[in-house]
Length: 132
Image 1: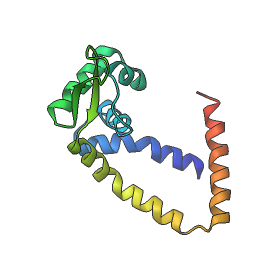
Image 2: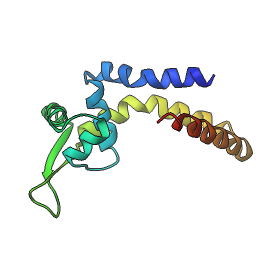
Image 3: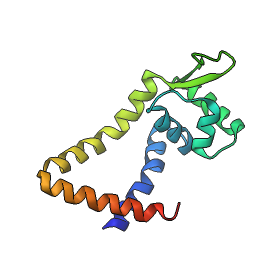
Image 4: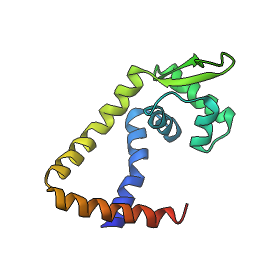
């Protein structure tokens, strides 16, 4: 069951990217930007790509209206990339069915069951992090 879960979760980015017309790097960029604005170099590090590649990703997302570049709040020489309302809406629209399913699954558990599942999942995550 755990292998099936990891297989399905590994297929999600490609499936969502295909439906949205984005590539996986663009999709992962939007996912990172959902947490808040980030500098282009930080985005490059998060994606594991070069600064030039990151710039191209941001250019494409900006052309679609999914992100904006803005001057950094305290250092005007720098810029930050911010997800736009359309980028956020795109991500949420694609993820909503999964989120609804996760909420429904959680609602079936009582507090004791939820604690057991949470402990089990934490142990699985720790086991997988050994390989990182």
